[in-house]
Each structure stands twice: as C-alpha cells, then as structure tokens.
Length: 430
Image (cartoon, rainbow, N blue to C red; front, top):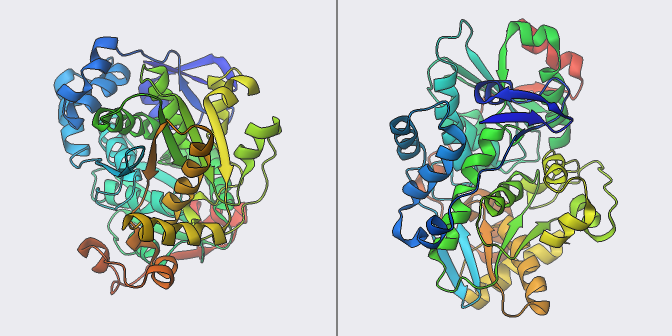
C-alpha cells in the first residue's frame, strides 16, 4: 500500500515512511492511494467471523505488501485481544462499547495496533523511535498503555494542564519506564500545535526519529475501522444502519468513512460534538472556521481545529455537498449533556460517559426525522474515568480495579508553557 499527502497527491510514500514519519514534509496528512474494497460475500458473511478474523481481513488490505499473513494474524491477535460488544438500549438504539481495552477507551484499538506495527517497522534503525503525541484525555492513556515497555521506543505525551480528568491524568503520568508526560499550560489545540511544529523542525528531526500516535498517523485510523464492521455484524436488523460518533479530532469518524468506502453498508454518519462545533457548523453552511477550543465536561472532544477534517475533505474531493450527503452534525452544551446522562440512566438503567451522552442526544435528534433507522452510538470511554462529572449526577459510579489502583500513584510530569521555543529547548536537552 502507498500513501499520498493531502496537500500534494504527487507526493507518494510507502507504508514504513507514512507510519514512522507520521506527517508529510508539507504538513498534509497521509491517505492511501486507493481505498481497498472488501468483497460483498465477506460483508454478507460477517456473522461467520470472529472480531479478530474481521480485523485481520481489513488489516491485510493495508499491510500485506509489508507483512507476511502470519505476521498480520499474530499482530492482530496480540493487539486486538479484547472485544467491542454492542448493547441495545431498545430495538433501534444501540451502544457500541469501546472501553473494554486496558486503558478503558476506544483509543486502545489504535494504540496497541500502532505499537505493534511501529515496533516491527522500526527494527534495524540506528535511532530509538520517539513517539510524540498530544492528548485531550484518552489518547495519552491508551498510548502510554500500548507502548509501555516496547523495545526501542520512547513516548512523550503532551496534555493540557487542568483539562483532563484526574484518573486520565494518572494514566499518563504514573507509568514511568519509557513514558514521559509534559503538562502544557494551555489547551489541546496548543499541545497539538507544538507536536506538529516539532515534526516540521529539521534540527529536531535530525536528533530524533519522530513519529506520532495521534490520529494524524494513518495507523490509528486503520484499526479504528475494525469495530464498525464488528458492530454491524452484531446488529440483528441491518436495515438503515447509522453510526453516531462523539467527535473531537474526527479520527474515529474518518475511520468510519473508510469502512464505508471499503464496502460496509452504512446509511449515515452522525457527527456529535460539544460546544466545539466547527464541523457541525460546516455541515450546515459550508463554512469551515477553526477557532480556539473551549473546555467542556466531555473534555476528549475539546478540539477547535480537528486535524482529520482535512482527510474528510480529501475523501469528498473538497465538495461540501458530498460530505453533507453522508454526514449530519449536531452539537450540545454541558447542561444538555448532564441531563442526558441522567435521562439515559433513568430510562434504560445504563451508565454512559459524557462523550457518549453527547452522542445519545445527537442520535435522538436524528431519530425524530428518521424513525426507522438503527442507530449505533459509539461509547468511547468508561464512565468511571469522569467521576467529577458522573457522581454529582448519578451518585457512586463503580470504578474498575485497573483504574482504582492508579489513585494512590504519584504523578510525574514536566510543566511547560505553550511557547514552542521552550518545548524545543526541552527536547534538544534530552
């Protein structure tokens, strides 16, 4: 498989370059030169396959030129060793639970797959691979867990000070070994800007072999497409299937669009956001205007300039009409989100985190005009990761043991400003 830059389709690289370089030199994003299409027979027989077998078939379409089939099978069985079950609230409203991995967030799929692929591709290099990643909450924890102890790889995680939940912060800052946390005095967008600038810094790239674990890296999107096929498989009624995605940097939704292009019969995608609603606004009026993010209780979606919007544009040839034909957008504030968390529990006895609750609101809004649709809401993180939000609404929320053990661990993080020169100086001093 070859990949081109969204800023220059003539700039084409192989898988190893796209994965380990993360960003093209022109600051575009890598996209596959062609999106493979799975056979109709495979789609119709999804129920015959395990999740790991489905993931292997999808992954082979992207990796088979660089990995032997046995290596792909081994990679998938190691990386995707947990499930993505669908829980039905009622006959037409379903929840895809993506929090059954080690960090209890959907990003475990991407982080573990990426760690396995990168580790193999980086073999034989004379430099250690350094993963530079910005997080608005869950990416950092998943990347830390996925890369912890991986040979010849160091991880540097940038997160916005005071804007991730306490347990999310502990997941980033307590593991040690090859994981380093930088607490940035700004927003996620500031963290993301620092990462992107470092990738374009020639001197930094001479010192480090840099790669990213954000969804700017194409190997984050490939495994995120797996669970759309898995969710579709689990639905009894496969008519008018709609996926509702709580969205921040829009990697998850972009992965869903790739699944559709690969042959998954999806009627519509719903982009559900909090107050950071630049994409829903674009879908309504064709005007894309990034702006500084604002903090909300659904913090992993606090992104004012979503990187993957450029991939979405590329998929639709920069045609607004095409994109809005496949995607509809809705946005909700914190008051509505809190009310939704309570409503979901009162009506269904189901505990849904703040991000999923935004998805629920969008799904219910879409359902008013499309009463026969079968909507799958992506529940992207375990509600226990957001206790300061959840407990005032629902009371005590059960905390899984793997999160509970973090509470007494000591936080270790380096504090930096949003100034690139300070960040650059810190990197060059290591």
